[in-house]
Image (cartoon, chains in turn purple, brown, red, orange):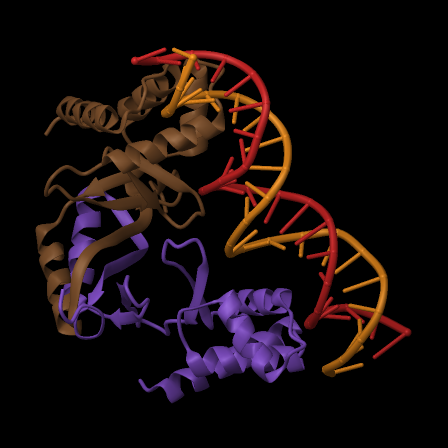
Length: 152
Length: 152
DNA sequence: ATCGTTGCAAAGCCTTTGCATTCAC
DNA sequence: GTGAATGCAAAGGCTTTGCAACGAT
């Protein structure tokens, strides 16, 4: 599924949610949603704020905060914590899509991966413990060899 | 490796570290270390504080904080963040040991698992992306079937 | 006109640190 | 006695919220 398809789908879902909940369209929300959908991934609130302010300097932190909470509530954004203490937001997974992350500790780049075999093995592990899986988090930390560790 | 072996090994490593670094033995440290080694796992600073204060009411939060930082520095404790905003401490993995976690969202129990196949698949994923792995985090969230979801 | 939204500033939480006092060696 | 350790309270980060002013419908 292309990025355009995903954002179109996200916009649709968001519009439905907002209509259903009586949420209003505002200049600030539009700006924040556009920034989020354009970049689409792994940004912190402050990063989103900085980008949104480039186009609309009047936007405040609390609005970004509340807008992203609304997107999460609408099922359009997912909150992720990678263990640096800040929450990052990424485009929500749709339907049965799912991915996990590879993170370069040197440059901070975040890559996404999917691995069906790992997913299945996880289920098997949980079954051994008698646990019904709701969700999981799998992050692989390392160093980008070509960019960040060319001569290590 | 039994829990007794692991704590004995941890005490030895800690003693060496403290001797090397000129750290002093105090009543408070002893109490905190004992609490940590006895329970051995996944406690927050406030939980450790509460347990330590049962035996020694004079202990303060900052001492627990600094003691656990020292244990981490000594390689005896690992800091883990499970995404609820608090840091938890567990007995450090020794040598090539490694485990990940299953977490019950209902009762909060934390189980440990090891799966060599998953480890290998992770390496393969990272190799596809050209990343040299330093460490990873793999948490499976769910519900304990026997205890927490007997009739769901 | 109504009620949701915004922006600021204040409050919460958890973590970290400065400092005077206390204690291990 | 000297320098490390303690405990308190204050300061830092990030997140969350109260509230008066504003704006969408």
